[in-house]
Length: 175
Image (cartoon, rainbow, N blue to C red):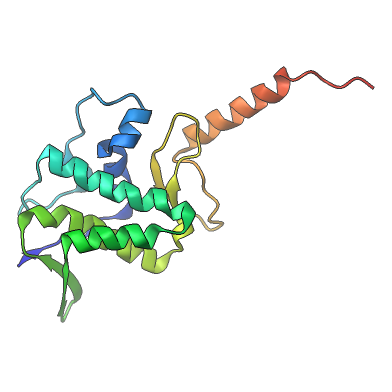
């Protein structure tokens, strides 16, 4: 059995935004080189790093969890990801850890179990894709209010500026 590494949710978000097809296409980055996955994920040296096509497939499957959250289907998508990876829980004195049978299942299992852990502590409405125009990057909202709708302050600012410009371009009513 192969150990499944624990991934921080911020790393999962960053990985999906760098490797999933939809965020890359929305940003016009299809022809750009991928970020170094080992650094992005803080991948353990002992775990074999998947190929680029395996990285992309895992990111696309994980993107599905984030994009389904607004419809209340995050768990449905997550269950599909977990069924594919088939991680097995193993109890030990130090707590629960996950294992898989094949090296190709390590990354999907790590992504799936990280999302499972995160969703165990947060409502699925706190996962999503950016509401900014020309952006579909994913986010995991850990704010106290839980009202995040943009992947970054940059997209939020762009949205606010565009709304302001729309309002300013409309004719003012005369009294």
